[in-house]
Structures are given as structure tokens and as C-alpha cells.
Image (cartoon, rainbow, N blue to C red; front, side):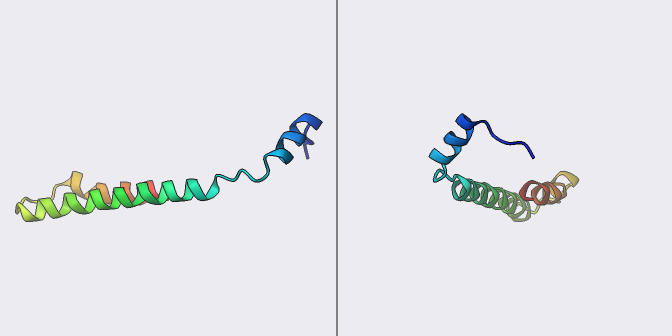
Length: 69
């Protein structure tokens, strides 16, 4: 296991309360929700216009799933 240098350890201890985890989680959830809404609106607009769903419409679903993992 690699040990930190004393100045690096002091920096880590001084900034121990700075946790960006919750902020990153919220941002990821917002963008995942926006992706889901955009994909749903794409399908709804195609169905409302009575347009046939093409392969690019169906490829949105795997990319949506892959993008949110």
C-alpha cells in the first residue's frame, strides 16, 4: 500500500469534510431524467404524427439504458 507524503496527508485531513458525492449523484440523476424525458418525447411525437418508428428510434432505448448505467 502506498503511503501519502506528510504534506499530502495534511491536505487530505484539512479537506476531509469536502464531499462532492451527493452533488455528483444529484447531477447524474438530473441528466438521466432528462435523457429519459427526451427519449419518451421522441417516441410520443413519432406516434402522435402517425410516423413509423424507424431503427434509429429503437436504438435510442439501448443507448438510454447504457448511458444511465
